[in-house]
Structure formats: structure tokens, C-alpha cells
Length: 242
Picture (spheres, rainbow, N blue to C red):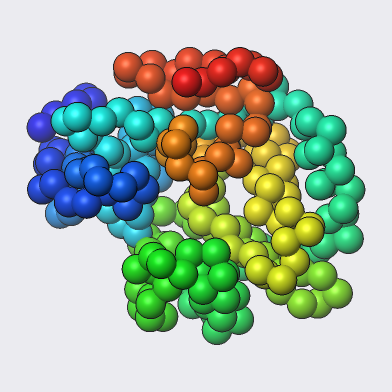
């Protein structure tokens, strides 16, 4: 299935139970695994609602559901709320270090602690080192692991793709015992600032689902853009996305 000019063929997956909404079936449209991909091509695909998981590029394509909405933040227009400004101040003592996208035992241990505390029911909690690195990285994508350290200790890890004109937040794990710092929100705020410093236009945050509590935080970054009916629509502060 050809959707965009000069892109690889696409295939439709079989239906399977949805990972986010109970009693629903999910399908994905995915780029042919054998097709050659690169950062520029992926930058075009992500602008049409696609997302990377490992080397697989996909977007939801469910016949009876449109709950998954791709979202991105126009970084030059973003305005931190009062709560977000407080989060920035609270974490001003953190040091951020860029690391290569490769396996690190300390990163993996934090990832496992995070999953066991925040997503104990999910399949990812059983991830082996190979599962972990294959999920977060891809040989054709430019990915950076950003460490967030407090007095030398690793407290959060943000996995970020560097694309043409944008950053894409792949995954963030943080120390479960430090919930008061709002490290997940801080990681997004830091990526917004970092994208702006790089003169990039957007930070992609993946998919948002209105009725999924675990994704509610994404709706707090305004203005944001949502990919609806084949077009990006801007939602300002206070504007309801539902």
C-alpha cells in the first residue's frame, strides 16, 4: 500500500488485542521490513503520523477505532504553565549528559526498575537486554540516550531520535522513588528546550489516547498539534482535544 510519494510499500498487520484500551482489537500499518530506511525518510513518515518501535515504522490503522492520535509540540510556540515552570526549577540541579545509543547496564537497570514500578502488568517488564536495546534503537536512525544525573546518580534516561527539523521522544524511564520531582514531565520540558536550541521545529511525543490515563500527561503541553484526518491541527491552551 503506497501512501506517500517515494516511500516504501506498507502492509496491514493482523488484528490483536489493544495494548491501551480494554476489549478492543488493534491493527497497524507498517513499512515493509525489508525496505531501506533513513533519517530523512523517517522524518517524512513521522510527519504523516508514523512512529518507530525499534526498526519498525508504523501507525495505528484500526477499522473501528481512531483513538490513537499522533501529537507534536511546536517548540518555538510552547509556553510552560505555572506547574511546568515549577518542575523546571525543581530539577535545575540535574546534569544532562548525551550518550551513544548502545547498551549500558546502568541504563538497563533503571529501565527495569521503572517498568516494575509503573507498568508491572505489561509484557515489557520481562524485557531482556536484547529486547531492551532492539526496542529503543535502530541502525538507520540517529538516536541519543540522554542521562539525567543528580550528584552523579542516574535518575532518568530519555531516548531521543534526532530527525530533520525535529526531535522525537522515543521513551523515558526515571527513578520510581523520586516521583515528587516529576522527572517524566521534566524530561519532556528539557527536550522542548533542547529542540529549540537546535533550531528544530517540533518535538514529537508519539500517540495520545483520551481515555488512557497513562498518556494524560501529553495533553498538558500547549500549544500542541494533533494529526487528525490527515492534517496537523493546533490546540491552544485550554482548548479541548476531544
